[in-house]
Length: 146
Image (cartoon, rainbow, N blue to C red; front, side, top):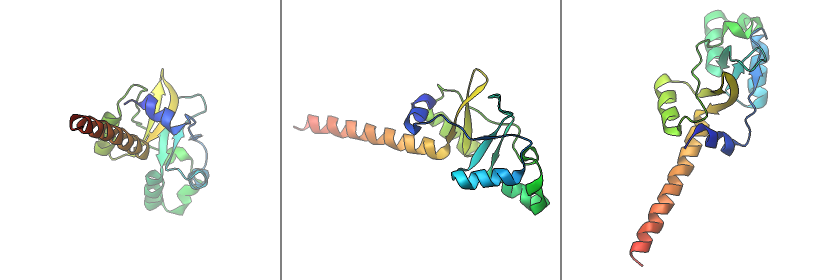
């Protein structure tokens, strides 16, 4: 199955974003308030400037101390963002995210942000897919022995 199906299953393509010049403390507040693990960094034009995750914040604090929370998000964000397209397959995303050791993947179409996939989204989708396959196989086996 594809990213399109995963986004459809999520029920929302809305992506939380933050400006690169926003204070990192605002980022932390948004992450906590929305109960999410990452924000896409954007100037608001649909183009991705970076991504900032809980891990990025923790690393910034470890390097620079609490004062970094008053610095702009751009000081802590990951600038080289891995992205995926609407037709990418769930199994490929799992592999990329596992090997790259990251948990969030912006979805881009025609250079514009269309969604955000978490590893949890992909795992949930794959489990549902595997359960459907299992059910189909069980039905097929039952049909053979009836």
